Amino acid sequence: MPQRRCQFALTSKLVALSSAEKALAFASTLTFIGLPVLTTTAWAAWQDNPKSVLDEAWQIVYRSYVNPTFNQVDWVQERQALLDQEFTSPEAAHDALKAMLARLDDPYTRFMTPEQFQAFSNQTNGQLVGVGMRLALDPETGALMVVKPIEGSPAMAANVHPGDHILQINGTSTQGMTVEVAASQIRGEAGTTVELLMQRNDTAPFVVTLTRARIDLPVVTSALQEIEGKRIGYLRLSAFNAQSAEQMEQAIKRLEEQQVDGYVLDLRNNPGGILSQAIAIARMWLDEGTIVRTVDRDGQGDVTSANRTALTDKPLVVLVNGNSASASEVLTGALQDNRRATVVGTQTVGKALVQSINRLGDGSGLNVTIARYYTPSGADINRKGITPDVVAESPEADQRDLWLHPDRLGTEQDSQFVTAIAQLRKAIRDNVN
Image (cartoon, rainbow, N blue to C red; front, side, top):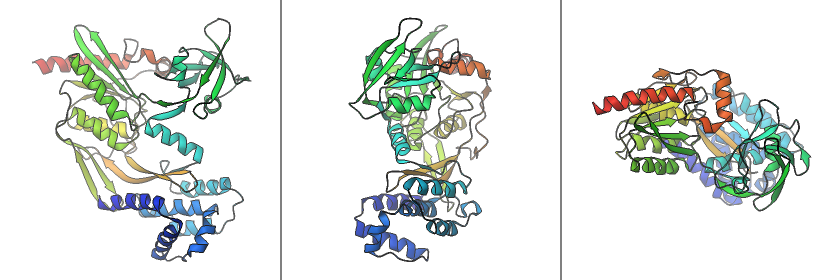
C-alpha cells in the first residue's frame, strides 16, 4: 500500500523537522487544501496556541482517515469551526477535539491526553512504570484486592499475594475507591516509593513499602500439562504489544523441547494491539498461506502471507470469546481459514479496522483508523466477529469468577478449556492416523 507508507513517512518526518521547516511543511499542507499560509514568524506564535494541536490532529485525519468522505462529515468545515473558537486552556481545546472526532462516529479514532498517551505507549511497548500488581474489587466485599503480582515486579519481590486486600495507599483509605483511582495513586515515577497498608485473609494489617520501577509486561503464559496420557502445551496470550512475538517464540520453543503432542492457544479477553505482532505469531504456526489482507482509503490492498518459518506443525486449538478483538481476530482468522487450528469458544468482537498511532505536539496522542482488514477467505468480520468451529458457552458469573482467579485458567475448573482439550485430543488422534 504505497499511499499508506507515504502517510507514515510524512507523519514521522514532521516530528523531526526544525521550527522553520515545520512552518514550510505546514504552509504547503494549507496551500494544498486552499487555506491561508502561515509565515515562519507566525508559526512560532501558533505553536503556543492550544489551537495548534487541534489543527495538527485535523491534518492527520484529513490525510489518512480510512473513509475519504469522513463518514459524510464536512471535514474542512470542521477545521474552520475549531479555529473560530477561543480556548482558555489546553483542556478546553482537547474537549473540542474530542467533540470533533466524535462526529466521525468511529470509536477507534480517538484522542488521548498526554497522561493517557504515555500509559498507552508504555502498554504498547510492553512496559509500565509502577509496582506491578493487577487490581480488582473483591466481588463479595467490594474491597480493593490484588488479583496477581506481575512476575519480576517490586510487588512480587515484596511477597505480595493474590487476594491480598489494600486498605490504605500512602495513608489514604481505599474504602469506596475505584480500581482506576487506586491505580493512579499507586503509579508514579521510577525510583519513588508508595506505602500500602495491606491485609491477608484475617490476619493483622501490615505495611508494605514498594519502590516503583520500570517493568517488562509478560503477555505470554505457558505451561505443560499431562492430560490422559497426552502432553499438552497451554499458551495464553493477553495482548499484542512489542514483546508478544518474542515471548511467544520462546514459549513455543520451550514446549517443543518438552515434546508436546499439541497446543491450546488462549486468546480469550485479548483486546488486540500491534498488527505486525499478530502477523509474526501467525507465521510461527503457518508455513504457507495468506494471513491477512488490508485495504486503505483508496482501495489499495496489501496481502501478507506466511513465509515458511513455522515453529511447529502439531495440532492446535484456539480459544476465543466475546472480548477477543482486533489483532486477536487477525490471528484467529488466519489459523481458522487456513485450517491450521480448530477455534473453540464464543463469537469474537468483530473489529476489522487498523489504526495508526500519532504523537501530537503537546505530548497528547491520536489514534486514527487508516485501513480495513479481511481474513484469508475474504470475509469482512467487522461488527460481526469470528464464529468458532465449536461453540463453548460459559455462564457470565462463571466467567467473571474465572478471570478473578487467573490461576484457574487452563485447568479443569475452566469449562471452555475442557472443551478445547476434547477437540485437541481428537485432532491429535486424527494426526496420528
